Structure formats: C-alpha cells, structure tokens
Amino acid sequence: MDELKLIHIHTTTDKMSAEVVKGFLKSNNIKSLIKANPGPEGAFLGRCGGSAPMNPWMVYVTEDKAEETRSLLNDFEKEEK
Image 1 (cartoon, helix red, strand yellow):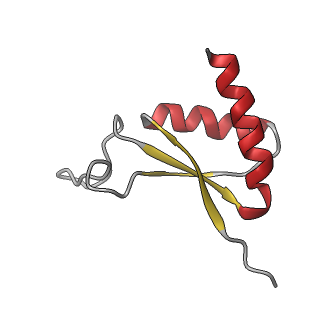
Image 2 (image 1 turned 90 degrees about the vertical axis):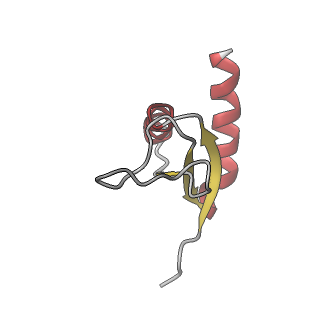
Image 3 (image 1 turned 135 degrees about the vertical axis):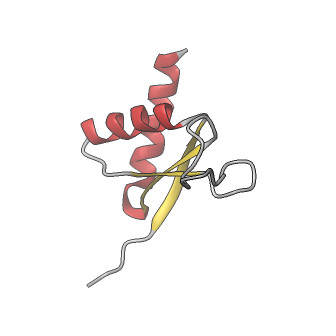
C-alpha cells in the first residue's frame, strides 16, 4: 500500500480560522488535518496542556490533493477580500 504524505498547505491566524478552512475543503471533498503551529511562537503548554486558540494553526492535506487545494484556497481568499 502506498504511503500518503501530508503537505503543509496553509497557515491561519487562529484555530477558528483553521476550522473554517477545514470545513471549506471538506465541502470540496478534500480531507485535511489542522494542527497548532509547532514553532516557539505557536505552541504553548498551559496547566492542562494544549495550545493557545489565538496562535497560528497549520492546515495539511495529502500530497495528491495539494495542487487542487492551492487553487481552491486561492479562490477562497479572493472571495474573502
């Protein structure tokens, strides 16, 4: 079985924006994964662990969907402006 490689495709300003992008991609039949930015400015451990909701979040898709996703997100960002 071929292994699918995840590609970082987009960075959002916060978790809510990442969820919006994920929902948009899902409505276009593209599965995605969102994760808190692992860099020092994006990850923090609180008392209970976790990540800050207002720090950058990363959106990942499989390599085979990267080109289609870039095109969709480009159109999505144009509509937001």
